[in-house]
Length: 263
Ligand code: HXC
Image 1 (spheres, rainbow, N blue to C red):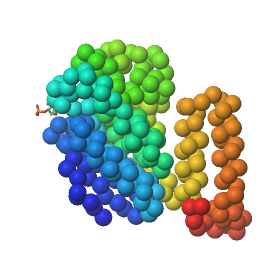
Image 2 (image 1 turned 180 degrees about the vertical axis):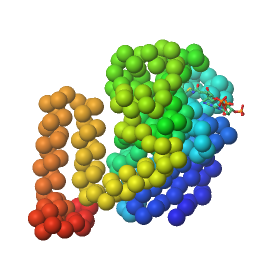
Image 3 (image 1 turned 120 degrees about the vertical axis):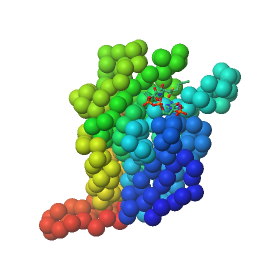
């Protein structure tokens, strides 16, 4: 099913998978405030809809996932506007933190600046062979503002991240996979199919365990090893009390597929 109430994105659902598509191909899907507002709404709707278990975010058109924050919009703002609005903060507070369910970025072309940063907010990235990642903000006299200097560095390490941020150069799909920025590279024409297939696999797993696994892996970025190991053990222990744990183990022993309740 398709919901057409948005101007800058489209949202479709296929069984338990939500496909969100950035839809400003004429501006290479540049991220303006309308896109942000609509993405916040779409991710909140995905999170709230109990029938939806995994999401994919991609870009429309053949060229770009997103070529960055909208430079035309930003060029008209004063520093005070950026500071007083805490510009870029809702990406993290509203989209990343509040979306506890999994989502995948399917990067089909340019993922630059805010586009690269948005892709890195996903739980993981699947890239087409045409994908190009970069943090070219240096060329505009600024710097990453939506997490690029932090998430890129954690993903690919200091040397490569520093080189990318200081030179503004783009990284192709093959290098991105070799550098652990992306989980997998697939042929351009099968990107959406592959991303939806991967999302459907995730959606077929016990839903509470999916959220728990996501929370655990994210903890590895937020805390010390000792703290993270405690989070892991506690969440593991909570899961052992779930109906799906009982069902999952019984199903294994009885050599059949599990039927999940999500609790
Ligand atoms: C607004 C953009 C845009 C952007 C592209 N467009 N990127 N509009 N914001 N980030 C628009 C172009 O102006 C053009 O519109 C149309 O999309 C097609 O782009 P072209 O440049 O004609 O395409 P091409 O020659 O193929 O070049 C592709 C490109 C180039 C290499 C990706 O568009 C580019 O360098 N874009 C900017 C990338 C960038 O710097 N991103 C970081 C933004 S800063 P018209 O109307 O002319 O057809 C950021 C973080 C925030 O994201 C920083 C804090 C302030």
